[in-house]
Image (tube, rainbow, N blue to C red; front, side):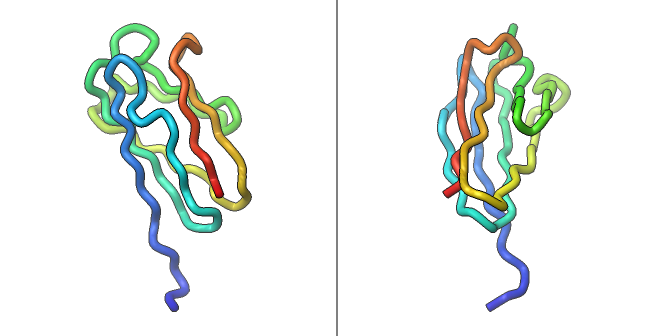
Length: 92
């Protein structure tokens, strides 16, 4: 068994909402979610993870990657800049 865990990756397409809206990661393995900007007009131009103190501008590049802590089980909710569109990351 390797001393280094393989990084978990997930892709969320931002196009009139988030697809998929829910992503699952395993606890204890490094994780990263990549937001792919297709249609990021209005409030979807930003993704906000309040619990992680993250507010990322999705218009700056086509793909925005955010590292997700997986040290304990739980959920990290995210939303657009106006809190109209929602999603969540589940650590289990």
